[in-house]
Amino acid sequence: MAKTKLRQLLEYMENTTGGYSLETAARELDVSVRQAENMLDFWIRKGRIRKSAAITDCGSCASSGECPFILDMLTTYEFVKEGDPHPVELIHSGCK
Image (tube, rainbow, N blue to C red; front, side, top):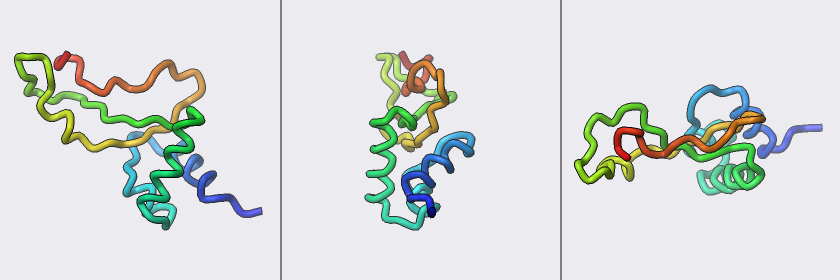
């Protein structure tokens, strides 16, 4: 039996290190960006994938404590390994 695109997405993400963009998901599965978004949302609801916009080192934090670049960060998606505690921190620790 052939694997569904939904299952292919999950397996691809499980075997990929680092983040995975919405556009990459669409391209890899040969579907529209909207379809890829719906599939990612399905796996997010199931707790198998999470959104991530982690910043490793932004280097220009505002004195008010808010990162001025957080809205410009590319949203990526990650496979959630069994036993993973919580989603990745979305704001660099220096920006808090």
